[in-house]
Image 1 (tube, chains in turn cyan, yellow):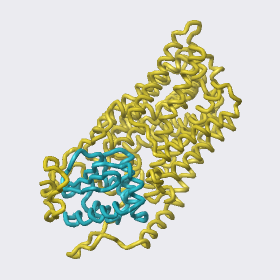
Image 2 (cartoon, one colour; image 1 turned 180 degrees about the vertical axis):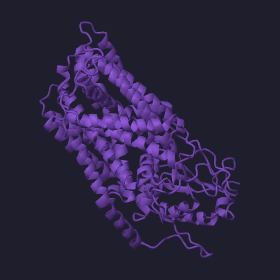
Image 3 (tube, chains in turn red, cyan; image 1 turned 60 degrees about the horizontal axis):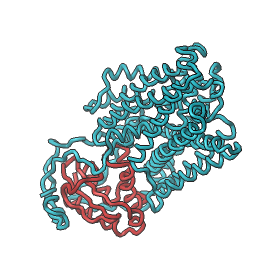
Image 4 (cartoon, one colour; image 1 turned 90 degrees about the vertical axis):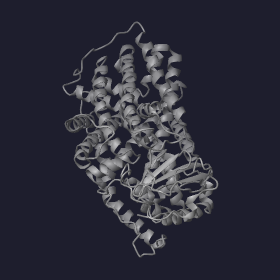
Length: 119
Length: 515
């Protein structure tokens, strides 16, 4: 199980990687969403506010009404935010569960794909 | 303070979620395509006159079994990747890949068939030379391709309105046709009039009228609750049953079968017979509207499947290339090109009824496999389901038998002559299945090995090692036997592992009431 420090570090790196990727920002320019995350093993929750492709904040707890809810193990989230795993593989194996539209699910994966095309 | 204590996650209500009316419209819209008008004619070939209504009713009752099976499977795996998950868990990864690849071929066939049928219908109404039909096909596919590449999506409410307009419009015209005087029903209740096996074949083709209604399960992640999908799976077949039955009765009432057989636009003939030019334009309008659902839903489902398969390493990675609108452009373009080629082949050979037969057989085959999945997963997955099919095991075994029979009945049907048998449909399916299986057995392992090598060579692991030396490496999981993530971790969650870092403790941008 990953602890808060590890999650926070991973999220911080993910935020920078996203926000500094010009191509990704252009691709996601029409994508403004509130994401909720649930660590199924620790019960820890956090949110992500995305505005026109820019990650504005990643506060703890569930903030606002979500467009997407992602549930997985804390280790999986850490590895995903560090770009060390392919989210689609985990999703297709049922290890990442998502509530939200198919388009949003794909956009979420597209972030990892554009930043780390070889993950 | 949020996040400081291990939260007890509660069910999250999404800002935008799908309710029963929209899910039902999605289900019915995916099933009721332009090719269904031809499907009704195929039913009439084996169950002439009013007997077709009996075949469609029996087909509908069997489809309710499919609804039950998919409701339970969807409850177990409420995700767009559901079919891959339950197939993988039940029959193995390779088989699941082969089946889903073949399944996606059905989507391409339906897109191609609809493009052809709509092109032919437009050309007919405009009294243009036959060759111009292909121009219309190219235009339709071109518009669909451009819309998809630009990321244009039909809003949910537009899709709902379109679906209910198509169904209602078909029902209204059929009722008008039924009240048309001067004609009479032919061959009432003559289910085996075309030979001893014709009744079974009629039911098999009737099943095709409902085909693809189960694709609504791919929207499970946006449904308000699992029961929304279950309701849609049971309501949509009823809507299709009403529409198809009235349409079949209207055709049988007003038009001799000889005028329908060989026509690519029986709905236009019915419109013409019932209301003259107004009726013809009416039905043309509805036919064009079906394209919105087919092209929007078909392109979307198939291209996203291709994208996911490429990201997973089961298709060349180029299929995951995204354009600046986050659309997998190579996947979408390939779909359009393949559909155009298939439509051209149909246009050149006039074998559109073969597509109906292949589609009908494939759907029966998929339903047989879904029933098999239910039997296997009843044994392997003991966790509680939101929906449990009553007498599920015996009914699923019955489903395996009945859908296998229907698969063979359509697979060996002769699209041109109801009294003959043909190996053409089963031959096409055998070729598709062989290509799919060969690809999975030969190319997928190579692709996966190449992807793994590329990942290893590209860069080292980014996540820093833990200070205590503990491993944070992701453990590889067996895709078949990997356990599910617990749905509700309440009561299982342990204490938070460490203190909350400062950045999680407060967010100055978030008002306290929200935070």
